[in-house]
Length: 272
Image (cartoon, rainbow, N blue to C red):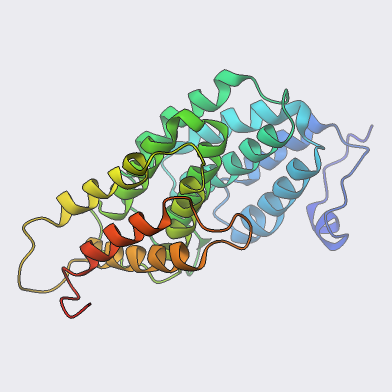
């Protein structure tokens, strides 16, 4: 087995073919270290691209829980890029664990959910892109993780719907969605709503979080969080109408869309 430094530029140039002469443990450690780098080429183009592919292909099954533990610990990391790439890694790990039963202990997802649910609605740096750091995308990456958690922890689905609602209505932001964060949130909500065992009440109950946040709004400029909320609801209405290419239309789409439209009449009073 090679003890030389892993040459990531060569791995990238080779299309991220898995290096069979390096242990999964060592690769996992190196990838985890690179995923906090402020250099977007190191973090995103090399580490995340490799991790996503190798996790999906099963090459890192032996260190899957370790990767998830390390990612979940980063929700309190002082650097923004470390926090926002943690949910991306968890999405990959959870998706692999769901696809291949037995690769993750049942308690792992619950443990990671605790950190994720505390971080997602409270993250203050919600920029999609930074000229120096590259993609940050706390909202979009968190949305991807939310749908993966819903698959791994079906008993948490209604809580995850509310978590997404709390994220879109979080008032502590001056950032207006400009990198399709609204679409990623709408996709996550739609994926969670595809669950066949959700009741109509469960499928719509989370919208009370949105309605309560908007209650009392009046004349004047639209604050960024309200703009983000309206943009997300518009995107969700489109998803509920058209459905997802992989999954179709959620069972309670008509009643959810009706409730969404009722909220959208607040800014768009001319809607029929």
